[in-house]
Image (tube, helix red, strand yellow):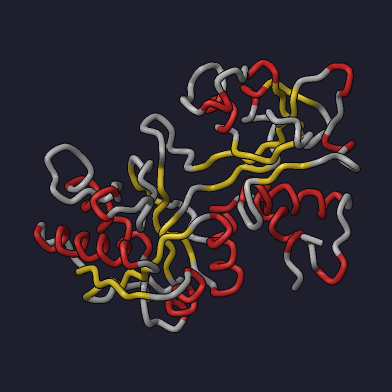
Length: 292
């Protein structure tokens, strides 16, 4: 939008406040002002960029730790809760929510996570919410106990490293069950392994939680929270445009407009907006080939 290459951008609600009004060091955004942008609402109206709570495409849930339905999610959370009380602050050698020691970012949990919170409704539909489910569905073409060890599925060398240190840190405080780290190539391979009871736990983002619940029958056990004051565990996917009274348009006037996406398959930048447009009938994919 800043370069004039697109007319509508599908982004997170935090994108504008983080990159306007002098809040960023990036040269391309130095002169950007939040008042020069506005949001397109689902009902066809527009709103200031500060009104994302009521003007958004969908609420996107935070990442969550998912398990099989026959695994006691409360017990998993209690273990992780004891861990975060001991390994999430000044003085702890191991940090659950910091990946810098491993030369990477967001290993197992996002680095911006302030704490894990209990999931009250242990099913993926309740965690994702109706707005998110409706968008994802439009993209679709077709006794509780814990084991002695909790097998955590990881998908990178750095994540194996961090997971191993988390297991060691938990054992040092005698936290049970012990965490064992099992490697897989992809998150979906982790889901299949959980379903087959080869592993027990993996941390997933919204789109993966949808697949985990819909395809593999998995359920969330603990959710990441990013603000000490807000346990909402979510961000919002929004449609952003430049404020231009002479060329104003709404969410219902996107035909022929150039759109900007954060990436194919990204939640706020692709899955939510494309799912919403398909749901509204604005996009009619042939043979489920949406990118074409």
